[in-house]
Length: 140
Image (cartoon, rainbow, N blue to C red; front, side):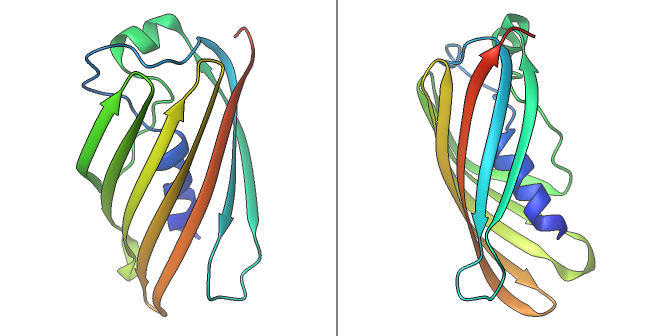
């Protein structure tokens, strides 16, 4: 499912632009994990894991966990050193549209958060919920 991958990218791997101060994230190699559920459907729980190198330069430029999310627009955001909240609207291919609200907490050597998405698919509306966790595993 393309939107599930898009949501993971957007929620767990989000570009930190417009920070007045650097986020409370230690540079290094990070492991990011997500658990996704689709309430009201028979779809099983899905787990994803990825790794990302975050440098001090990335943090200073505001590009930690950077990824380009094509077809999406940030509709609301609040960025702080200790976390962020944001809302995003995405228009996808083949009639998939999605809105999502996310909250992330930056805790130095770990991060955690949640994301709730409402999707309009050719099969009808769907809800997706995601729990996100990340932790620093060492140097890059």
